[in-house]
Length: 244
Image (tube, rainbow, N blue to C red; front, side):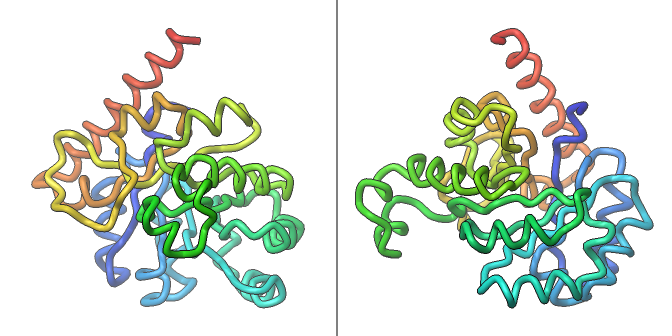
């Protein structure tokens, strides 16, 4: 993949009109467009076809399925939008992951959500995670990444802080997708992200794809901001090749 192919832009907008505007604006700078809960709930499954008709970029359906397997499987079977999706996310429950892997077509890469990038050690403790795992989220991420691999997932979602450890343990067996990206040059006000890294550091640490939303969407010139992110990705890939 070239650097651009590794950039995922989340269409975190309230309606199809704004989604189409961003796809047309950023289509030459972005490799994957992500549809999350806000847009999917607003527009329904048809939004996937609407986006796919406008771009050759891949489609990431980020619905973070998390329920009993029977319920999730019924949702997937009724989801005609999966026909044109390239990635979907499922929370890291081994029985659920195995059921989804067995159900979906081979063209869809299933990504297991390990630990949300909005969670830090204190939040994990409050959720009842054992102290030894909550104190260092990396251990929890590795544990859940192992479950994802055993279930047959194509990859995982984790922060850039854990990407190196995941790649060291699993190598090319798992794709690493990293949200929580905040460039040094970005002008994003303090938000709900806790475990953040720059685009350069995420890719240098081993991330295969990075999700960059607010730093691009809220920039004065979103196209230029996306271009700057792609440059950081490219620089990190070059440095990775030199190290290897």
